[in-house]
Image (cartoon, rainbow, N blue to C red; front, side, top):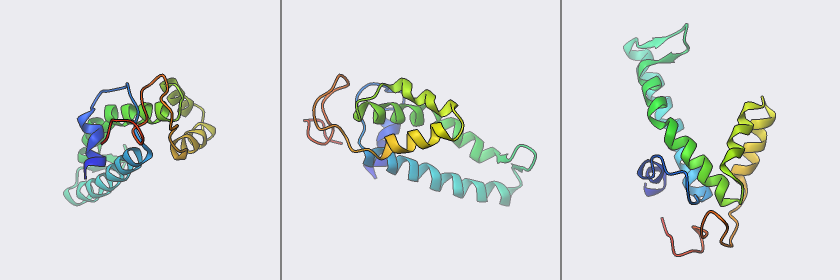
Length: 125
């Protein structure tokens, strides 16, 4: 449980590093909550066909926007890349593929300019 809550504890922390486990469990948690909220939106009638999102799902998306960006930036730091690489998402399709590859890469075990490795350093989650 601590792995998917850690990005909320570091709500707007764009420094440091995040392991793959923290990133992917957060993504899984957000996906599952969005799925449940989508069903609730449709059941309660708060889903808008025109806008293609519901009130609950939209509110949750706004809630997790900053933690999602922050954990992605920290994940990029963990593989030795600057957080500005997140802007690659602007490039259609190619950007998403590049980011997917970056997100599945293993951590750099050595200390880099963003801090010590969460796997091997004194910092444990």
